[in-house]
Image: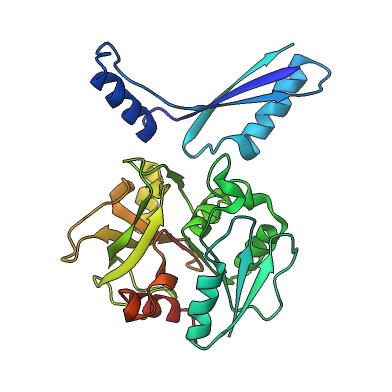
Length: 80
Length: 223
């Protein structure tokens, strides 16, 4: 089983990398962009009995290590 | 006095920090991150700067789980004094020994220069040799010093006098090198025994290197 974890700075927490990328896109003429958020993706291969169990386990990993929930939100996608 | 400095893979300020405290006439012991206890006669723990675990994932995120950090947390819970400098500050934030978190600098650059700081509160062990309102000149060198704390947390910091140092120019006007909230450069915990700052006082102990203002900061801990 695979778990795909996306970690982003929370809404309302200014994202310096997103801001820089937004600025660069604007300078290249991509004027349609209204906002950019830069995050990171963590892909885990794991053994689990069920998708539900895998999700619960990965959620614990996010809360403990993968995300700093003071400033970051995360999403988890489990794929077979 | 006995000062203990934990060393993680990627730490690079442990020897400067040892030099500074030895220069002030004190014993220093560097301990390895796999150690599970701190020496019994420890008077102060200084978590030094560097790039523990290569700053992978987030600065300080992995160092937080090393055996020595458990011992350091227990030491602080018992009232022991802990100071985190730069990456050490980031580790203390990730360990929840101090409130808030660090983001990349607003301009995304690694900023390395001398920086003026204003002492916001000297009523604590760390800054007791300084005066509130005093301006100090201390080097900074970091890419993730953009301190963030949510509104309620920030209000609590002010209510408890936990904002200790802010970035300013030589006249004391705000001058922010990294985008940190309210120009914050250093804070302490509610009990005032755990301290963290991004600037490097251990690099400002001899005038030949540009400033010796760091001496008064480090001396606060010494009896």
